[in-house]
Length: 88
View 1 (cartoon, rainbow, N blue to C red):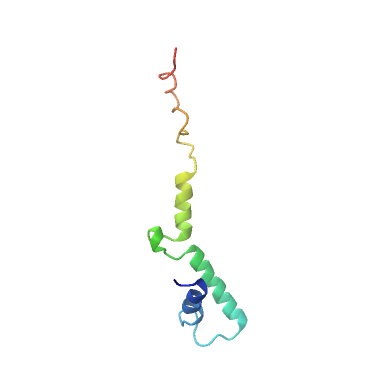
View 2 (view 1 turned 120 degrees about the vertical axis):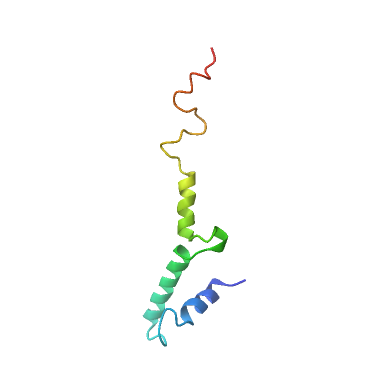
């Protein structure tokens, strides 16, 4: 299993993707690490989520689970239908 520390070092610190040449200051490393963490937590495409970013997956989940104004609640009949099921 890959650890998050090992992954961040491999993808952020020990690569030339985020910077050219050696790191000049600790602040440069901190900024690159914060940028990588933001990407990892919010924008990376995650295969177990259907190749969707975690933020996109969470937004879709909330859109599916939050009640909408155009839908009747599950425990109440739709408007205008209650008379049909009324017992006399």
